Amino acid sequence: MKKPCKICKKEFAGRSDKIFCSLGCKNEYNSRLRKATQTEAKKIDDILHRNRSILLEIMGKYKTQIKIDRILLDKKKFNFNYMTGYYINKEGKVYHHIYDFSYMTFSSEQVLIVRKRRSD
Image 1 (cartoon, rainbow, N blue to C red):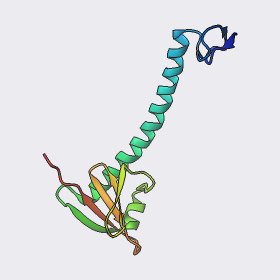
Image 2 (image 1 turned 180 degrees about the horizontal axis):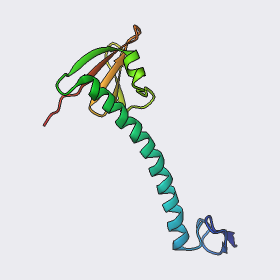
Image 3 (image 1 turned 180 degrees about the vertical axis):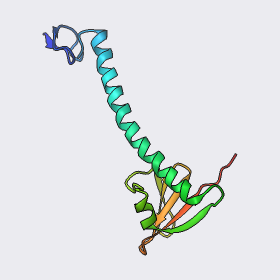
């Protein structure tokens, strides 16, 4: 039974699970998939790096913890929707991680920013 190639639409015969007519079409498919993934990953990584830069600017080089008004982060266009992870402590408070920084928002519109200590 012949079926169309997923890339060039040329009909070919082969195993029932085969979806490409040639190695070239298979490579083209994977190349397109990789490019789409890299494009989206770069957008997200740019947002994360910008968020980290904002936190670093606010914290300075040597501070390990600071409490600020959330409005300061809003003014600097900090994107609260992106993070590298989170942690819920015993009291149920959520710490959002952005690389080596963490922050926790309070109901009083304040944010606690903490820099993780290096272990090297």
